[in-house]
Length: 265
Image (tube, rainbow, N blue to C red; front, side, top):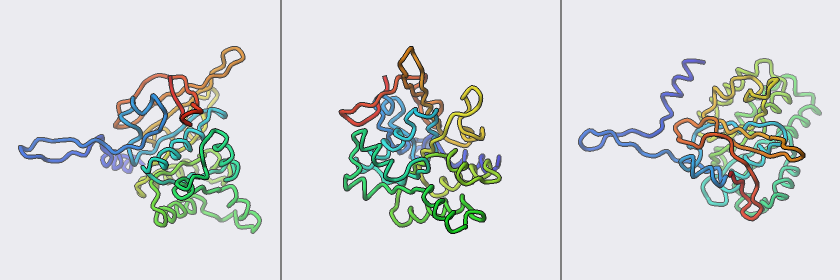
């Protein structure tokens, strides 16, 4: 794993260096995909570098799924990209209803033609009914499906909701190896990944279930929920984002119904 990681570190750059007349090294800024979180992108050099794998981590109810979908939704509306949203905790219908309730027009033709939603829970139910779940290479099937979708519709972004639910659903024997396999596959396909995961551990300070997710990822966006009296307030922090100067600390997070975007204070 260490050698593979070193190869990745050597392959992903903060800038593409090239020779200019006079043999001076010049740098080209990385292409980025905005998060469309007002107050964040302008303090994160414009967004997430393309090709990065970023965890969106938080406890249940912190709106991780909404952040992931809203980022992809607005990128599609602006014509910046196309993507796949892989869901396991909600059906396609439930996800669409939830996002529509926040004001996002999921029936917009651009959204319908540029965001594909894969419901892996539904696939599990179908295979269970056929008695076929025991010998399924779930990770292999997932990677194959993503590759097929990429080749057929040319998507660039995958939002995966969520890593913990996937391993609970599939009950793999070596989940840590499979996390590494999944991340490597996303990189090989040249995709930008937003991976949703829970905070784990007794103190809820571990990013993901297996303790390696933050190490393997290029970035971590952490969403917290803090109670003050009878109120619960959400806050967001960019814990890390490779090759990026970004805002530090935790900042209040709200949903702006007028713009249908998240905003940090």
